[in-house]
Image (cartoon, rainbow, N blue to C red; front, side, top):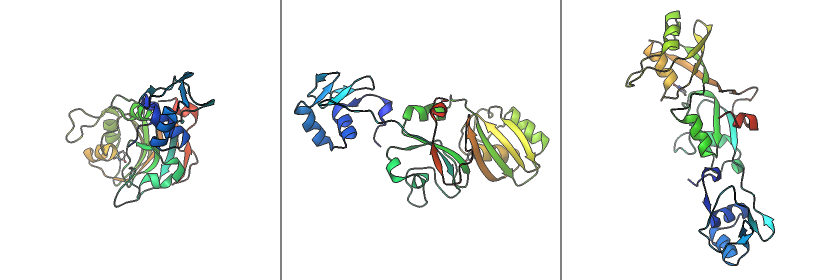
Length: 237
Ligand code: URA
């Protein structure tokens, strides 16, 4: 996968080829012809590295760094959270083709889970959300096969010991909706965490829908639709 621009410095020929839509070979030609300057100094080295602080020009034209992309998608059931899969449709299929380049999925929802999914080209932003140190709450609407007892809710709030994990889950926030439905907010993202938490309490999740991550919510986004995040939403993480 190619490296997102915001991650680090990039080679000058890579930068020129992306910003001018040229092949790497043609970008090198421009550089060796002396048509590219970095901070007003002509630079003929294709392997010179540039960062966001550098002003790169083609003759007198400033070459703008591509902006990272940040999307929120309302994922339907039946889609895999991946950029490709041999068998099933993937969430990237729901994004317009011209927006797909370098887009990565932020965390995973199971194929049968619906709801809020973030996608971005910004690797550092993605890492801040998915890192085990991240403590942002993700809220799920959880429907269960059996009654969710008051005792089970207390356990979820205190922490549940999952199979093959050393530590119990971190305290969750729970709001009861009906006898079989709760709103569950968790700050971790272990594999199949919600289903395993309810299974550890002797219940079974029959439907799962993610409503929000921190203050980013689906609002009136229809299933299968997506939108760009606002600058304020991007700045939350
Ligand atoms: N927890 C699960 O069990 N599944 C999901 O898709 C998300 C959280």
